[in-house]
Length: 338
Image 1 (cartoon, rainbow, N blue to C red):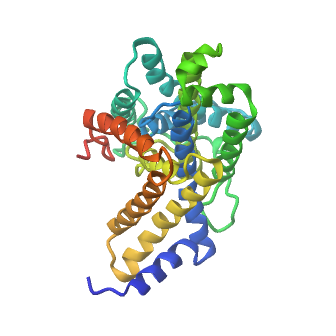
Image 2 (cartoon, rainbow, N blue to C red):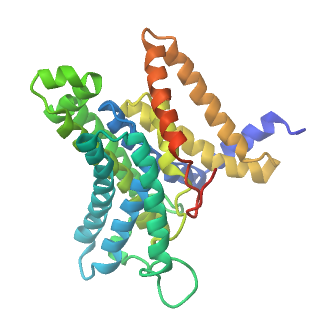
Image 3 (spheres, rainbow, N blue to C red):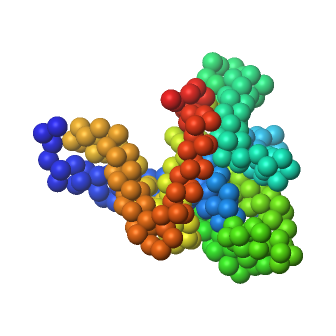
C-alpha cells in the first residue's frame, strides 16, 4: 500500500488514546463489548455456547426504549434504573428461549441462538418502521426516550456516559456471582461435568436456564446502554456487531473478569483508532479486523499449547462450526451479511 506502518500506528494511538475525547470514545466502545463478552462467558462457564448476544442486545435495547419512552413522570433516580433493568430483563428473557429449548428438547443452543439473532433484528426493524415509528417523518426510529431515562455523561466534553460504570459493575458482578455464590459454583460445575453435577444432587437444567438468563441480561444491558447513553432512540442497525465481537472479547480474555475487561478496552482502542487511521493515512479500517483476528489466533495457539487445550479447542470449534453452518451472521439493517 506504500503507507508507513509507523504513521499508521501513530494515527491509531492518536485516535484512541491521544486526547480526552479519544479516550472517551475508546471507553464508549469498550462498554458494550465488555457486556457482550460477559454474556458469552457466563454461558460458556456453564458449558453453553451463546452466539445470540446480538439478538439479546437488540431485545434489551427494545425493552429499555419502551421503558424510556412510554413510562413518564418518574424522577431520574427511579426512571433510569427502571430502564436499565428493563434492558436486562428484555435480553434475559430472550436468552431464556434457547435455554428452555436446550433443557426441554435438547436443541443445540448454538443453532437456536444464531436463529434468534435474525428474529430479534428483524422484529426491531419491523417495530421502528411500523408500530413504534415516531410520527411524522420518514426516518425509521422511535420517539426519543425521556430525559429522566438518559444515562448522564461522566467525562465532560466527550460521549462517555454512565453505562461504562455499569459495565465495570457487571464485571464485578460476574466475578462475585461465579466464584462467591452457590449458584455460580453449581453453574461452573455443570459446565465442567454435567454428569458429576447431577450425581452430586445439582440440577443442570436449572443452572443452564439461569446461565442463559444472566447471559442474555448482560447483552440486554449493552443494548440499553447504547440507547440510553448514545442514540437516545431506537433505530435500525444501531449496533455495529457488538454481540458478535463480544465472543472474541470473551475468548481473548479467557472468560476471566479481568481478561474480559482488558480485552474489551483493547478492542475499543482498535475500533476507535481505526477510524482515525483510515482518515489520516488512508489505511482501510478492515485492517483492524485483521489485527483482531491475529490477536485471537495467538491466544488460541497459547491455549492449544496447554495440557488438554487441543481437545477443548477442538470441541469448541466443532460446536461453533455447527452453529455457523446453520446460518450466516445477520447484517446491519437486518439483511444477511454472508
